[in-house]
Length: 597
Image 1 (cartoon, rainbow, N blue to C red):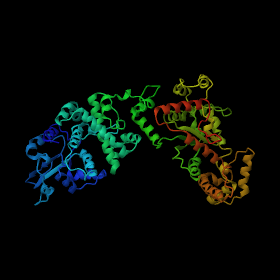
Image 2 (image 1 turned 90 degrees about the vertical axis):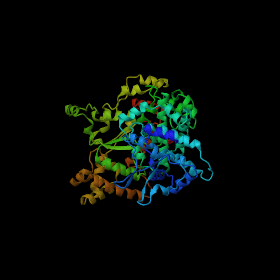
Image 3 (image 1 turned 45 degrees about the horizontal axis):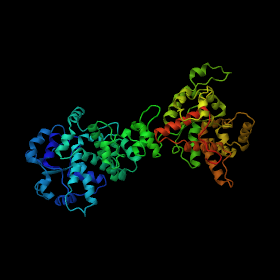
Image 4 (image 1 turned 135 degrees about the vertical axis):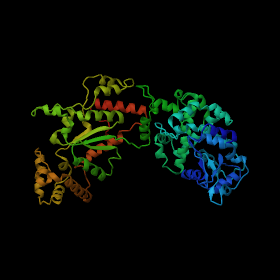
């Protein structure tokens, strides 16, 4: 920075959106970003003529309070700066070197000359520290690099955005007024730079991002994170985020200047000329933007979904296997299944949440039906079931997030048949999602058929042969659990009679063994589960095939593994077509064959 640029810096209030940092604040700023620097090293670099503050300020002495007044960088001090400029502000490299101790009033121990650095100078500092023994002379190109960043820092709020919101350090009206008045060409002339050098700085910063933030997927995901969250990061990751902020700032500046979109921060790959000469939307072929133009364009709507912030975050998260949306919505009929199924998963060696399985207690089969339909239905006739309470929930999650609805129920309420008799999916909407152009003739003929499934896919549902406890625990396990929990002394024969009655198609459950059981079912299940684990672990022939829950878990695990969350728009559309056909044909595609494929 020279004196001409410094005066322009204050006249145009370039400090407002990215205020300069006092020496101690700059040191702290660097240390938080993994660059360990001390005042003595800054002093050494300055003595060698390699690194300077952007300006120094001779503090104004207040005789009344006996303190030296440091400046504040806000909306209201611009005129004060211009009055003080000639006598109180100077460019350090224009002065003879002065040891830093001389900047203090030794009598009262207070700083009387303040050194101010730009946050952008950490870039120069990283270079100097990495090449300390090789550098003997100043590097003018590095100064030009920093000047370009300072000159365009009115765009700093766009760098600090998460692509949806940006925060201002000044009021909204003033910021946009100054932005409207900002003339990039005049600003570049002040620092003796041209637009090609601006593009080059953008490309160089973008080139640093892989080193600190990782792949292009990670870089794109970091763009979407709120800056308040990013500020909590430290070390080299935080330095990479800093560079990302600068790149986003320059990207917005260049786009305003050119009046069009330019290549994104992970697409430039060091080539500044294509920033200037190539329109990204025209890019085709094997380039990163060409790939994105192909796979993130919705061929049904023409929409480029890579520019849809939340949609892109969803795809990126799937690419990084974060899977923050459920893959399966597992509806169960009561609190017992909601509590116990995760325990069976854990015993089986899985965490159901890591598999993307969300377990939802529907609180009984009656909650599936509209009260009007249910009340008006004759008791002696089958219900004309309409799944009002779940229809929109299921269709929304299936279409938007590809979350498969699954059901586990009790034979007592005939849940599966009642669900099948009601409308579960919107057939017309499913057909609208299917692209017929690349479909084979048999599928094309099939979707033209009027007789299409629009209710539950039977492969996504299970019903207990008897009930949860009878299907999954041994009589001895139930006997011990009931006696432990209820303080009873029921015999094994009492429990076996319940199991025998089930075999004879009588509908009985463990609540019929003793009146105390009804109010303690969950505790009994937990205790029976512990005894089940003991029995399985003690068994010489370890087999769990006779407990139905484990065959259900196998199918749910297969569904989770084979339900691949989409990583781009093309993938999502392909999945939608497969899902739609599978629903319309009542066929579960998320199931491995006998060979495990």
